[in-house]
Amino acid sequence: MKVQHPNFDHLWKDVITELFEEFLLFFSPELFELVDFATPPEFLEQELQTILPESESNKRVADKLVKLQLKNGSEQWVYVHIEVQGDHEKVFPKRMFQSFYRILDLFDQRIYALALFTSEDAKYNANQFHYEFLGTELTYHYNIYRIASQSESTLIESQNPFALAVLAGLYVIKSKKDVDIKYQYKRKLMRLLFQDKMISKEMKRKYIQKLFVFIDHILRLPEDADSRLIRDMKPILEKEAVMMGLSLKDTSFARYYLEEGKKEGKKEGLKEGIKEGIKEGIKEGKTEIAFRLLEKGHSIEDVAEITGFSIQEIKGLKEKK
Picture (spheres, rainbow, N blue to C red):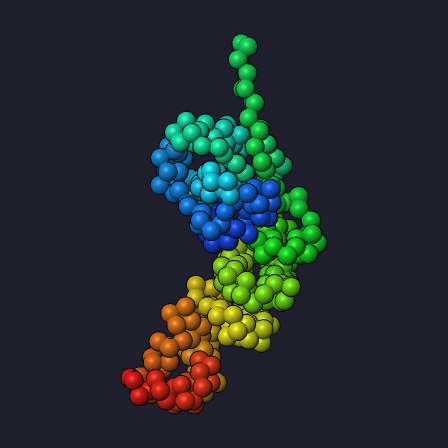
């Protein structure tokens, strides 16, 4: 029986795009050292649609084709295939080869190919395509990475933030359908995400938001278990949301806070709802948020407390309003 995870491929695609430098360093340190990241990676989504037949491109939404500038001035193309459990088991090596020769034929570029296996099924271990017919023979080898075979302790000890995405994938496999185990894994990942690991605050701001959303979605819990986790994580979460500019938008945490704000007629319940609105809008800028709060009649003191601005700064904003 095929098991489909229709949203996981999108999650992997997004986190690879957002953390591509960390992704490449994690999977291919040798190639990473050759890349000139002063020239941003170019994601060739349109070209990938050209290479793959329409029927296949609809199914392979997690595939990535990336053009990199090397330090020696030449180009390097990276093709990443994300194989989600249940998709095209028998023909996978052939599809890897087809992608390779189509890229080579159409664009005449060198290719680094990687198959990232996110399921536990051993049949996805193939790292080559072999063809032989009446003396005509071809073998195509490609790089593979099987999440189910990785060491939990090694991933936890890694200083590369992308290791947390891989660890989340490992925990999905290990937890299966057991909600209690998944709860413990998600709680552990959230704590790992927020703790200091000899990584600067500036670096954290770069990756923490995307990993936060990725972990929340890939280890989705039932509503009651999610609420229990949020209550457990609340002190850490609220501290990091302010310090790291973390937005709770599009996460189960946002829904929890908004519902709490609606249920509570008391000042504290309302303040939590206001704080959530702040966190969702951090990326739009604290100044804009402060203006909105002032327009709604909140006191200068409350706006200063929520946004982190000084009372004098809020007074200045109010005068401009």
